[in-house]
Length: 147
Image 1 (cartoon, one colour):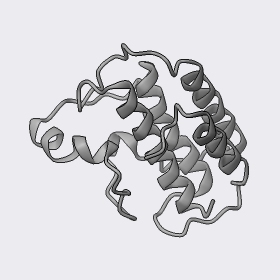
Image 2: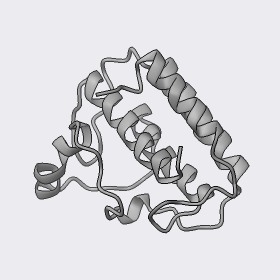
Image 3: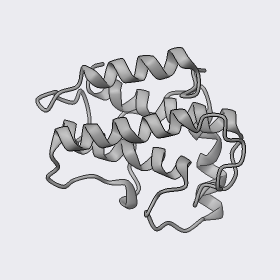
């Protein structure tokens, strides 16, 4: 499984993000390109300990979904998004893309951090799990937009 923290995988994600533009259309789902790049910022900010999303841990959600976040099995198309992570506003694509690039760069620079804050819902992850989760989520949404 690829990891955000691997140089080739990180470079690939950056190149794929560059191919998305304001007019890119999703192959599935309801988000437009600006909403998608806004949405993709949240998990990166959580990994950096800079998220302002309010979430409560739920043992059932944790038991059912934690391993899925870093398993090799891809996310299902049209999987439901928790309300805290929904991006359905009117966003400026270029601003959101620049923000995602900034957060991705910050996480890349922090890639050797072995002591991340626990995820607000799922608790502790290893460095490897954090890297896989970030790659898997970004890959899912970049595939959603055909890149």
